[in-house]
Amino acid sequence: MYYFENFPNIYYTFDKDLQQYYVLKNIFTRVNVISSVLQNSLVFYKYPWKDGDTLESIAFKYYGDPNRHWIILFANTMIDPYFDVPLNQNDFANNIIANYGSIEAAQFELDHIQKLTTVTTTVGGSSNTVTYTNTVTPEPYTYDFATNTLVQQTIPALGLNPVVTVSDTTVITPDGSIVETVITLTAVTAYDNEVAINETKREIMLIDPSYIPQIEAQFQNLLST
Image 1 (cartoon, rainbow, N blue to C red):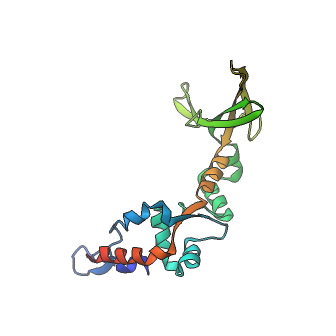
Image 2 (image 1 turned 120 degrees about the vertical axis):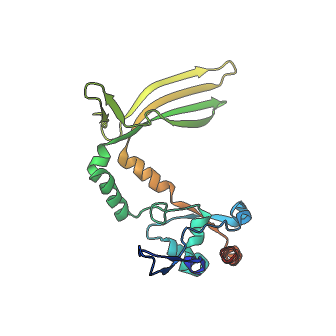
Image 3 (image 1 turned 60 degrees about the vertical axis):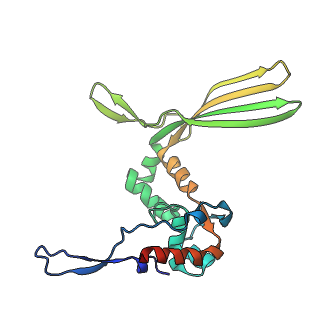
């Protein structure tokens, strides 16, 4: 099923004298497709997006029709079919260049400082480690009061991925447990941040194919009322 074929038609004119009208699809129409299905985790399964995948190729592989790619968008609450999915290597590089000027510039631009707190608890020879992550600097700029301007921060002279250990403490509790806490700061470049964001988009959710006819039927019904 083509996504826009069921959208209602409207008459629209670009003629200031209102003499000539065109029949267009009202692409701003919005409907909620079987919210009970979309909210039921049992009908979903995870799919790892691979290099070379497209919404259309996945729809063809799992739903038998590339035009059903819109169902994947619905299932993952995607709005932008280009930037809401992981970019391939070439598109990713082009996006970096468009936003930062060059790959090298992105690799030397500071995006934020990441604080890692790693707590290792050892009891009776058995250890458990938990790591907490938070951002220290949400904005990669400092304010220059002399010039009244924002100045972009750059990566410190420690290298592209400097890691600084702030503290490393070990405490032995009264029950004999050993708790070691290590706090480190890591400079995250704009490039590495973009890579991380792109990678988070690789795991998408697919609806079980048995529900697809039901979803399409309700979609058509909603747009026809």
